[in-house]
Length: 111
Image (cartoon, rainbow, N blue to C red; front, side, top):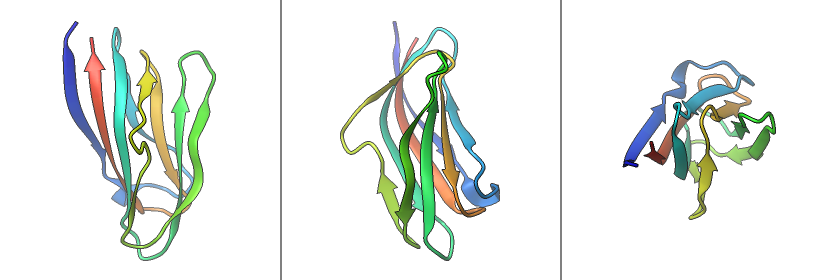
C-alpha cells in the first residue's frame, strides 16, 4: 500500500454563510490520516467556524463548533492530533459569514 502526502485547499472567497462546504472526500479503497487543518479568516470581521465529519456509517460529528476566528487570524484545528478517515468520509467547513474562511488540509492517503 502506497502512502501519499497531500495538501488540499479550499478557497472560501465565494461561499455562502452557514453552508457546510466540502473540503475533502476520501476516495474509494483509501484510508486517510488528517495531519493538520488550518482555517484562516479572510473577512473584515470575526467569524465563527465549524468543522464537521460526515462519516460513511452515518455517525456524523463536529470536530469544532462555532469557534471564533478574529479578523486576519487563523486557527490550527488538529494541534498535533491525528484523525483517521475511511472511504467516503467527508470533511466539511462552515462559517457564519459568507466568503470568509480559507482552508488548508494536510493529509496522508493510504491506498
